[in-house]
Length: 289
Image (cartoon, rainbow, N blue to C red; front, side, top):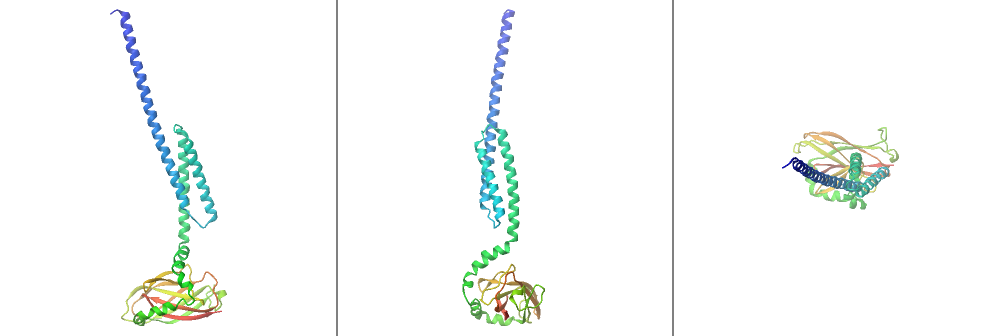
């Protein structure tokens, strides 16, 4: 083989290697591009899922604060706009998708702040919500009756023996104004102080227990406030106006319970019932002008 043929052979070999390398490089670039497209498509789907989830969570948030509701609606609109942009963006526009991903993270942070704020509001209104949704619902039939306390008196017959074993004596009732002075006028009423003595009883259970006070107005409806709640009496849940913890050791024990008024009451005759250990242990009436 002469020198010219050798040179041509070398050139052919080099060209073959160059073409092979170009083909390999092209295929490798295509594979990288395909992987990037798959990754971008996956990221786009994740972002879309997060936005849709946030939108549903906002829909589930309900508050009684009109200003806060307007802010929540504004955030929902931002989520909708971001979703529309995401669905319009080309799958190869990685820069735009990254921008929308950053906006989504910002929207998630804002939403977490709103969730914390709403949780705080719900915590502050817990007693009010409980009263509106639980007490009023469970107590609907009792409110409709003109003589609310009748069923209490009737149902006590099965526990006469227990009621005799433990009694609240020397019950005193003091309606107080905002300066803690006794008043008999409903217009000045701020608190009601009920004091009593639990008589000695060696057979009674010793230890800590709750004392529940029910105060009924002239219309027979139980007075409620943020201090109120429900307790079990003879297998059913009934409302109490106020309660306190009492430590009883079988000997005479003095105790006082306060009920705070948050609305103006009606003049007339009021009744107070004291409950302990599932029994009525005392009662007394008083009048307000």
